[in-house]
Length: 357
Image (cartoon, rainbow, N blue to C red):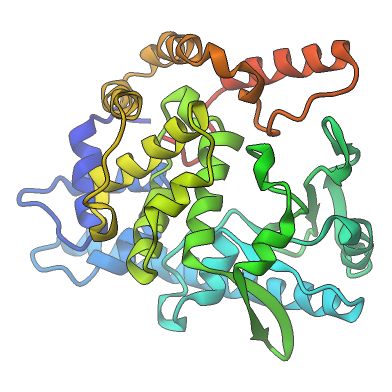
């Protein structure tokens, strides 16, 4: 894997906006796009750009066509799953990449790389939803047990079939701050859509941005680790363009301190790389600006990740109980809670997930 610098990232972001910079090094851009899982988005935007080398154009066209075929299969898989859930009275909410796949134009179906399909159901429907999907050949790979510290919720379930190109992640609660535990908020901010005669819920642009931030900054710990998920930042910029996002309302959903710092860091990073008219007048605190600088300095210098992560953890000590990705819901047993905290701290220093920069 080649080493990149922050200038490469800025150049790729410019390409993803449809504005390739003069003298662009396509080898560097494509390598970084592959690493960040944005190469199919790049293909859609720049494959007709003037002065592009023919071999680059051919490569991007091939990538787009292959991903379009994969996404058609994922859409068929999603349609089948929704149909079988409807049969037992469950109308799920589709989220993240699945929501983008469902909402986009058919001509753009190859633009977004999806690793899986994220579906949300109410907590009371979790067990019956798993059973319904197992009835059409899915096998439960992960997800036994209850949410740490709160037996009302089931852990996300990962279901897979050998014939599919991706699995299904079945949720009944987002990972992140405890204030997002009520899934009725998600249903209340989604619209009912028809999918091949069946029904599902598609969240508003506002809600999709909230959940993308929850996923990256809290579940994956990108705030602590200084990581950049360019694919999701591009999603946020596109969703902000489509919907009239009230950033003040969005930020108010998160408590002051660590939560707000993490959210502001992600919004500020999206503004820096992609620009968003709706967020151009926002003001950010010192902590978020420092974290943006940290991301810029750390990019391409993996040896800085651990010491800067430790420094970030130390600056947020007053918010210790909110550190873990499950939202700070404590176990009744002090021993189990300590074990969980230690496990979550160790998880922060694991290897970078696929797609993270």
